[in-house]
Length: 325
Image (cartoon, rainbow, N blue to C red; front, side, top):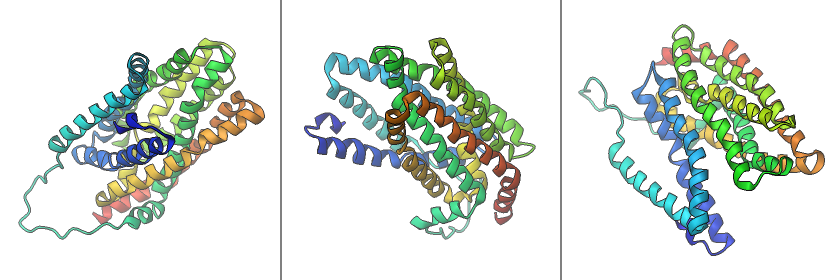
């Protein structure tokens, strides 16, 4: 909310990057850990429903923020969204609760203090979690590059105005991701009942299916085909999104869920933050169409790596956690 008060670049960076980004960092890890407490057999579907809010939020926020900024100025957009966030935070502080144990314990267990480095050690010593973290980083790299440069691509290549370029680049992808993730969540819980490793295999297949759609949206010269590329890209990536935290929590002890989530998110967004720079360099050297098409290579490698992980590591790591518990 205070970003709207910024009167210079330093305050803008502090409020938008350090304060806003730092605040958001406290939401993700415990958020998914809390969902996992309440859902076991329906975990993927529950997290899929939660993820739909992200897709709808991206579509609506771009339109609402643009409208508020156009009518009342860009500062008002931050005031409005910031105020909603403050109210939301107060409601969550009072309404969100940890799941209570089914059977009351006569003695209070001694809780192990989880150190900052423990999350890193657990993730990097668990092959499935390590592969997932690397591929999650590849996912964020491609998504960040897409979100940053696709509106510019439509603007420059098809002479769209900025408002239409922003809308079309987000709408088809996320509306099809909305449908895809609900389907993927249901299928994941169903297929995993027979073999938990199918969750990770589904993620790998989702990335591989998205590859030709990325190439399509980076090379087509006809707008309808570009939109088909957006739709296929969004629908296929949903099969990764639906299983991300379910896969991680399947191979990580429950007491490390939030720490492991934090490690994966931090690594993913640190690597993903390089995408705008990389695509910007490619745009200058070989054109933006080439840069967007090259994003397909990242998901091709990640998709294959996920399939390897599902075949050779997942069930071993899954059984190890169950035996320890």
